[in-house]
Length: 454
Image (cartoon, rainbow, N blue to C red; front, side, top):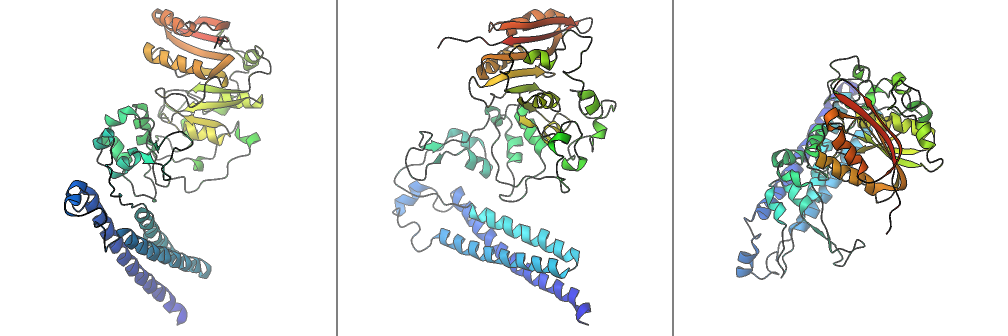
């Protein structure tokens, strides 16, 4: 009889706990609502009116909402611990799986999310000074964006080690033009799981809302994530399909991304998910004069090329070949229809999630090599390309190499683009122009940044 009663008794116990949780959540919602009313100015948020009737010290006399919040936090924390203990006991006693999942998903996670959200509440202090808000804050209505943009003053009231009195979080200027999309991106429950919206984030980035605001939610990952392959195996082997979230792609596995599949979902870097073909790049002679070999480029500066940047689109094969030669390469990547960032990382290499409209996150004169291929073609605006080339020059050290690999454009435009590459007066080690088609041509070059007087 005891065994037959156990599921019913266990379920009744869960219902009792759930009722208690709901009661706590009612308290949380009530306090959160009061705080929102307060922030909106329905109570004492208008400091001019408040000071007209009360002194600054009289506003909270007899009622400190922070103390009340602390009491609720303590209660929720204790409840969370009890629920976790019950969950562990269920695992040990092998209680029915649906009860355990119900407790974990429908009860434990919401309680923790409410605890985290309530913990973030902070009342503004009423003092003799006036709080100056940045004009950009008024552009947005979503509370989380306003909190992110607002300057954060040092807690100790002194100059910090950056030499500033406050920290300003940064967002791209075009975020104002994409207000609707940005507010959708920043609409989440603090401390809970983020939405699976990396594609929305990338849309914001490529349209100039870059850098994006930081978020206070837990990023999602594949539920069946597997241990990556060892480095000596991962460089030339497609990763496990289970290590990628495929929800926002046309394909659902790496095999589908083959260049032979017309529905693969991407147009750049066709065939770069086929490792047997990738192994031939930059190490095997081809019939094209514009295809330089890695060993020939490194021979220009023997022993001096140690770190560099691969500025293009691909799966990290250039970085893989350079790694075999003890050269560390960071590869820029955008997930344009395929998981380019994921495959680079799963191969044991370093992806840099960056757009064309972003200043490179490297200090001046630090890179030995910049290699570019497959990304900057004849579609790019000359002024935009000018900014990009000068940023390459900024991070490339004196004596460093700029490797332009298979840049192509219309024949009539080649003179304009060659001027862009030659304007910095780099030394030419290699310079080859060859036909691509009837109306288009290739350019490949290896150029050396000259030393410059201080």
